Image 1 (cartoon, one colour):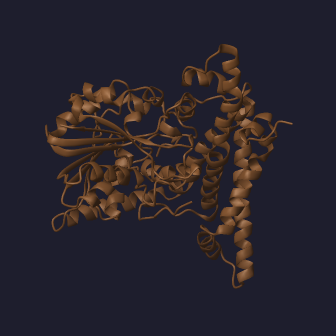
Image 2: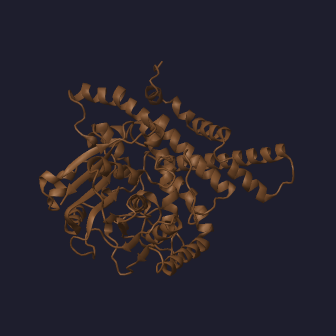
Image 3: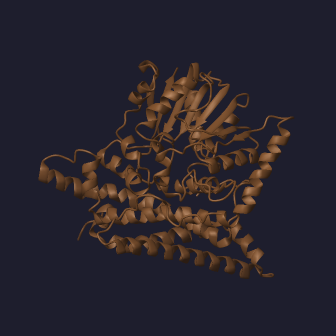
Length: 383
Length: 103
């Protein structure tokens, strides 16, 4: 598995903690690379032909595939293992984090204080939390992708644990594919911008649902003259994001806000981005967020949203939906059939300005989890 | 400080008809994980013994960090994952998954 860059805000794993993380990485790699493709084979050679013989047609959609595949012993075995590996993933990162949490909180405060002090001489990042912010129900109803407490729960004063855990956890989740600083999604969207709009030089960038700011930092580095903002509803991930960005010496302004209705003035940004955020919202929140993007963009401004793969065939859609039913990605099942182009129109963007593209990063099947043909969606619109 | 929850909030899926089978799978993976930890410890100790010199906890921790990307260790972990999942290949469906004849 490719290396994960440590920095001041990451805990040190003991021998045994490291061994657990390494094993969960190996197990997930094996499940994805060697076992998961077998579910497609079982479907193609057994389940689909048997269904066709009985009904004279293939299964109509991913829900019909679900009725059949969840009864298959091979799928059941993979599913049980996949669920356990996801729980194990978090457990392996939680242990070293909890052991060093007081020290990590102190380090975050030091980095924040240092940023405030040196802000007079040089540009540094900021952190603005809103303890009164109501965390939306799509975050509080279930812990998204099984991280206990999700992005938003403070278990102690000035907690940063959710961010520490998420940073290492998502790196393990994709077998290191996200890069040494979990930079792949930011890099991907940045490459898209440079290809489609080579002369676009944003001055005010907003990263919505930024979590630990792993992608925000990519944008801030790419456009050092721009002011980069990151917003999220989770306080502990934002405390971590601020400390992490300061540890990496990248100035970002983080604030705790809901992307459905922010406190920024109309036309504040010329570039708004998000990275795998939309599928963690809700049916009603999605058009509100896209409407907020339109309000916040200055004329000519651009919005770019990177979204997770949802598959093309019924079996691919079913396999991606494993996350919906087993990994607390509850909105994912709706995202499978949602027309992002139509959602952007609901947000007020003119049809001719909206595009939905696909982008396939170069990944090994051991890093793909649910598919052998991984592609991200990119929703783009210009005001 | 509030005690963090042991389990994530939300729906807990049941894959098999009997929930005890789901629990056994979880325990089976937990056991394999701890076996992986023990294998790594044995490997670390063997490396320390072969290298010679004084044995201390600090030195063993350092040795474990150095061995992180070691190809032999990566191979050992992969083999353990493969052995762990091997019993399930006895399934008829697993033979289909591997593209092997059913006989």
